[in-house]
Image 1 (cartoon, rainbow, N blue to C red):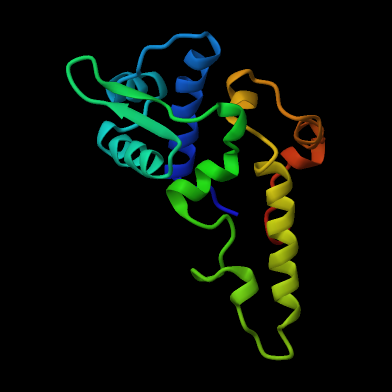
Image 2: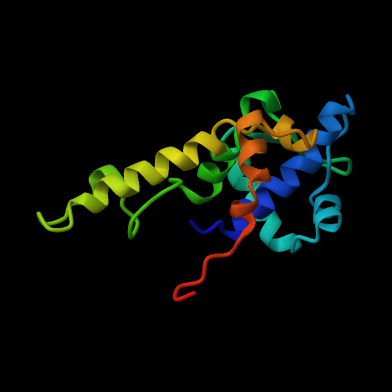
Length: 159
């Protein structure tokens, strides 16, 4: 799985916004402020924020004191929700969802591999919310996986 820059930037911007929500700060956050805080290119961030608004994650306020705020409770927004909002399906094979891929009888087993991989990703991404990220406290199962030493080891073909 590759995490796109869009997903990474979207989540980083949302962590900034959610931390204000946690602090009970009702003010909106400008794209410029988010860009500076997270080192995200401003033009790229504008498009990401618009995607998140269309998905119902953010709302915007226009004007001199305009900016962005969460449109829904961050306890109800998962990492998977954000990734789908900016990039589409979590797992696709050449742009096709795994359940819709067709193979000949020799390779049909691959479809089950892709389905299983998606289920594993969902287990982590759908169970981690913006609140978890903003509070730097992952769900127990995700935390356990992240502390596994083997998970931190890169696997390079041929080694």
